[in-house]
Amino acid sequence: MAQEKVNLIQEKTNLIREKAGIIREKNNIVREKINIAQEKANLLQEIGNLVREKASIVREKVNAVRDKGNIVREKCNIIREKDKIVRENDNTVYDNMIHEKDTMIQEKDIIIQEKDVMIHEKDSMIQDRYNSIQEKDGVIYEKDTLIYEKDAMIQEKDAMIHEKDKEIQRI
Image 1 (cartoon, rainbow, N blue to C red):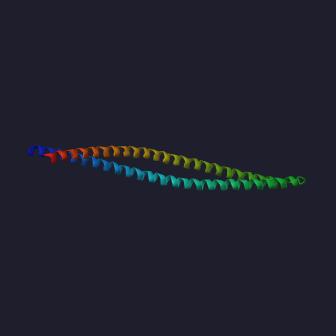
Image 2: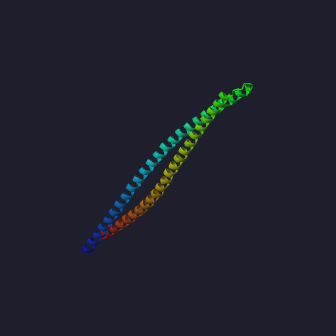
Image 3: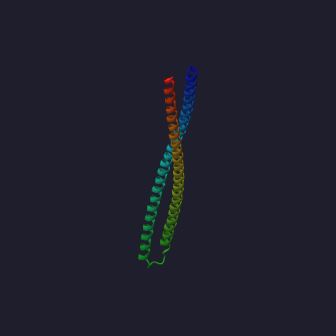
């Protein structure tokens, strides 16, 4: 009878050790989950920064487009002036001014194209970060599943320990 009680206590002790091991595993998983969540938060911060940078580039592009529009208007005014003074033989001044405005328009077009490239790069970077976040979400989901499994195992061990306690009290 005493030996049976000793055996039951040893079984209970082993169950408690197993439960402690499962709890340690669960704690490690929770730590991993916290680290992944922190990485996800960092990625979200990076996305915020990239979006702000992109917004700045878009504003610069809008300004360049506005500048181009102003230059085109100036060019149109020069052409109108030139048309009014068709009687004069020397239109080179106006031709030079029109050429100058065309050059300025081309420069603005180049700036606008550069801004488009920069915007595309920022979009790619944002998409990469977003994809990383989705991966992190998948890993977090896996960790949650493991945590639930460990919780179920802990509950099983608790039930087994409870049964051993009943058997020990019966003896």
